[in-house]
Image (cartoon, rainbow, N blue to C red; front, side, top):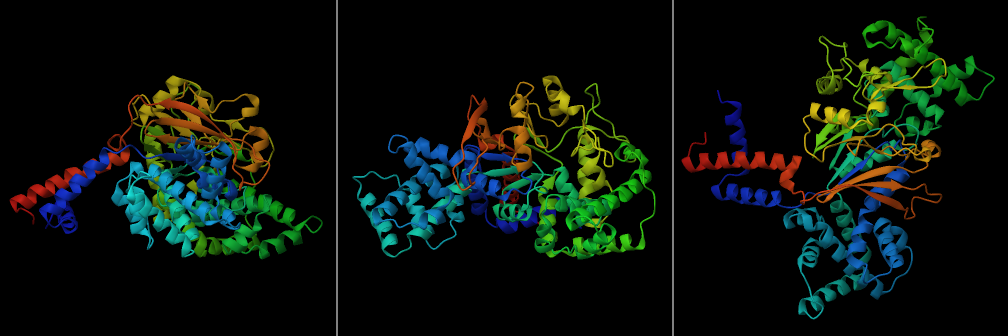
Amino acid sequence: MKTCEEKYFQLLSKDYPTVQSICHEIIHLKAILNLPKGTEHYISDLHGEYAAFRHLMNNCSGVIKEKAIVLFQTEMTREEIDEFCFLIYYPQKVFCHEHDQDWYRQNILKLIRLARYVTSKYTRLRVRQHIESDYSDIIDELLHAQLDEMDQQYVYHLQIIDSVIELDEQDRFIQILIHLIKYFAIDQLHILGDIFDRGGNPDRIIEDLMKYERVDIQWGNHDILWMGAYLGQEACMITVIKNCLHYRHIHLLERQYGIPLRKLMMLACQKYPHIHEIEAMERYCHELQIKLESQLIQKYPQWHMSYRIEELCLVALTAEEQQLLNDFKKSFMNSHQLKKHMRFLFRHGSLYLRTNHNLLLHGCIPLNHDGTFYIYHHFEKPMSGKAYFDYVNELIQNAYKNGTDIDYFWYLWCGEYSPLCGRRIVLDVPQEEKKNPYYHWIEDEMVCLKILRAFQLYEKECMIINGHTPVRVKKGENPLKAHKKLVVIDGGFCVQNQEKTGVAGYTLISNSHGMRLKTHHIHQGSFDEDVQYDSEIVYTRQQQEMMKDTYKGELIQERIHDLHELLKMKKQEKLW
């Protein structure tokens, strides 16, 4: 019987059947390792605010404008650069107005220059492969020719552009160039949790992320709540419904995900006939939530959730209530659209990500009051820190595949020591939330370094990148903590939080030269306008970071090693 290694090299040999094909790929991959690292974009806590998300993706948190300024600051005024960037962000709005041939020619030339600049970190092959159009040959030639205005080729290229305009293909041509610029402006997108709840369009955000492809997600507590609901966990289901009712997003459940609320409305209005039907439904859900969570608290004493409900309600569900939950379970688990979105979250998400010198997570690394790691006694053996995170990551994936341990999604949603929540929230008696000691210790550089080392991160530039907790800028809070060993980037994309924070959110931009924190200012108009950003340097690298220094570079080097082994076998004719 063949070993796994033998099977692997046989499969690899099918992709590279000749010595020349192996050598070609090794040369290609080694060249990639010596390119600069691509730009990474970090976003957190979108909470269903699709307009804010769409604008972020259109302008890449101001990265596109920064590159346009570098290229055109000596040729164009700032107002002209703003207009040019607006064309990139929202071309359809610009196309609504009439423009002459000279306008199209000049803007196409500028878009070609910007696309050339943006794609300079990538191989010509990768850029060409991404131009999915019959114009790929023309665009490839325009991008990779370094022209002088006296050059005959410049005249030739102007003729190409003029022909595109004469054939009335200019709008389509511009859109292809814009798509290319946006695609290569950001190499990797990191979403640090909480796509769902509060805002009304998390489904549209996920649809866009599914098309984007180069994305990873660190689950937030609101995401894990929906994931638990999809798997049929009853307390998660009823909480999702209650949240949608509270924020008046019934359409999300009924129209987008096909989860009918009519039976709930009838039962609620029958029980509370003298209040508005939405309020009646929300109250009915709250009472169900108390019953369901009381059962969980009693069932899992090792989770230490007794604080959650001051007066447990251990009365059995009525036949009506149980039937309602059974109906909801069928709807959640059989919704085609929800299944598609949850599959994406499960496959592209994790509790944390260790990548390119940074530790990415949504909530917290639960700590004790003295700054030591909190020890969990939830499973067969005590766990803390990275070991706990890795185990729960596996538990979540097993729950998705096999339907096991789905009650733990409820703990992750609201547990005081849950890494996704980290707050003591009492359900039945309103009172001030208590935060995990982690949120105190993140101001301490030594504690942050201890956390980073526990996750095998030792380099000077290593940072913890956090979401989950709005930064109260109005009260003087700084998102950068512990001498820049930790940054919190939940700054208020959620409209409900902006009054507390005073800003409309934070994003991080990391490229081969360093990292910058972007502050998004509250904008009174539409997100279709070009909002303003403040940019603060987190750190600047003394030497430019190359692909070989990144996580992707590690994977490429492993691939090169395997190809060298395959090459030896081919040359020695020892391939099985």
